[in-house]
Image (tube, rainbow over all chains, first blue to last red; front, side, top):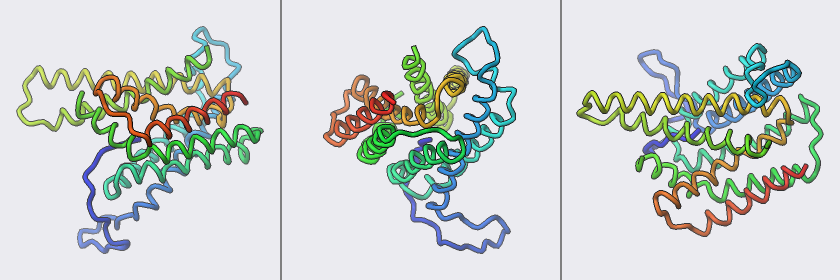
Length: 154
Length: 114
C-alpha cells in the first residue's frame, strides 16, 4: 500500500475543470475511502473463507478452495478500489502522513469483525491492537523513508 | 506452523510490493536494452507470484482463524522493511524505529495470545 511520490500542494477542494473530468477528491476523503474499502475487502474475504473452510483439500495451507465463493471475489474488488483510493491520496500528501492516517483501518477491521462477523474480541486483543497502532504511528516517517530507500537500492 | 504461515504471508506481501515498485522504477529508466526489458518483466513476474502466494496463504489462514486475530500481524510488515534496511542497506537504527517496532511486536504478541 505504499507508493512513493513527490509532495505537491493539495488541489483546491472543488474544481470545475473545463474538460469535464471528475473534480479532485480531497486526499483525506481518499484515505478514508481507502480504509473503508480495505476493511470491506478484508471482511468479505473472511466471509468467503469461512464459508469454504470445510471443503476438503489436498493443499492445506493455501486457500484455493475459497476462490469459488463470490464473497472472496467481492473482497478482491474492494481491495482493488482501496488500492486506487490510496494512489489518489499519496499523489498529494506525503507518504508518511498517508500511512499514519491509514492506520485507522486497524480500528475499523476489529470493529467490523465484532459487528458483522460476531467475533468475540477480548480486552487483551484490543490492547494488542492498540499497541500495534501506536507502534505504527511512531514508525511511520522512518518506515516510509526506509521503504523508498530499499526500493531505490534494488 | 500457523505462525510460520502468518510470517510467510506477510513476508511475501512485502516482497511482492517491493518488487513491484522496483519494476515500475526500472521501467521508467531511459535507454532500455532488450536485456533490461527482460529483467523488468522477470521482476514484475516475481512480484505477482509473491503477492499471489501471500494472497492464497492469507485466504487459507482466514479459513482457520478470526480476522481480528490475523489482521494485526500486518503490522509486522514494518518490522520486515526495517530489518531488510538494516541488514542490506546498513541503515542506522533510529530511536523511533526501535520504540515503534517494540510496540508493534508487543501488540502482535498480545494478540497472538488471545
